[in-house]
Image (cartoon, rainbow, N blue to C red; front, side, top):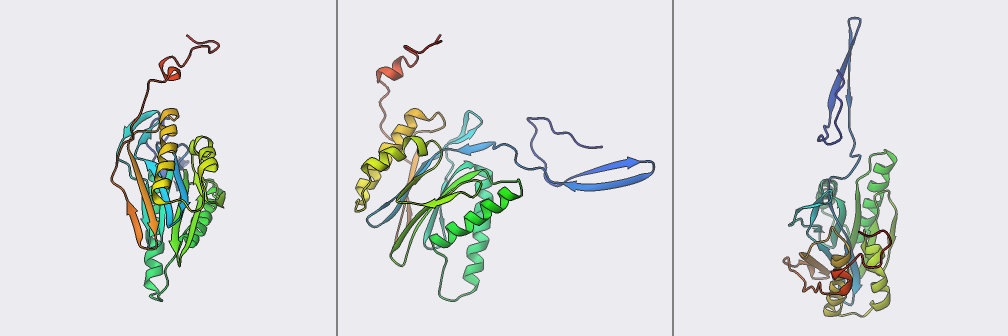
Amino acid sequence: MEHLRCPGEAMEWGTVSSTVNEGFTSSETSLERTLNPYVTGTSVLGLKYKDGIILAADMGGSYGSTLRYKSVERLKPIGKHTILGASGEISDFQEILRYLDELIIYDHMWDDGNSLGPKEVHSYLNRVMYNRRNKFNPLWNSLVVGGVKNGQKYLGMVGMIGTHYEDNHVATGFGNHLARPIMRAEWHEDMSFEEAVKLLEKCLLVLLYRDRSAINKFQIAKITRDGVTISEPYALKTFWGFSAFQNPSKGAEGSW
């Protein structure tokens, strides 16, 4: 008898369904796909600075509109030269990390003195995301890839359907709408690390005020020719005394 999944029921992979018809039994294996993301992370920000690449993200994991998890690490080192940040479905991000672990191990087995850089990882993820999209089984993530190899800085983004680009500063989620205008106005090529952190924290604060899924617990990661450093979680100083926060519906049509 075919199994019908209720809207709130957890997905089952590899469910076997059988049909009995006049003494004939047939069974087939059906894979159910991720139709909607369950636990998600919000924006990831990244930019180039004088010595390398810097990424930032909060540590919240939202179950629908509930901030269920508050210690989700969404910035991960990949190999020697790359760092990866992800927004979207956390379980799909974990699947992507498994893909990348296999890729890095396979590359290391060649033992040819070379190693994958951020440009190669970005290209690989672009192909993975587009391939899954063509199977109508996408990975529900937007990814930021940054790194330094042979003195060359690289920063790119990949969307859940394989859209991708390279730029001096990138953002995912609400960051595309709220943070990138600030980056366009204030970013410059010879930024010091301190200036880059200050700019990212300004963007993170705007997102914290305006994005319901953001929490005040952040990590910042940098990558230079010396390697990857990911900060301990920390919070920003906030101020909620603005008049728009005190009475947000004042003057709005149809407000209660």
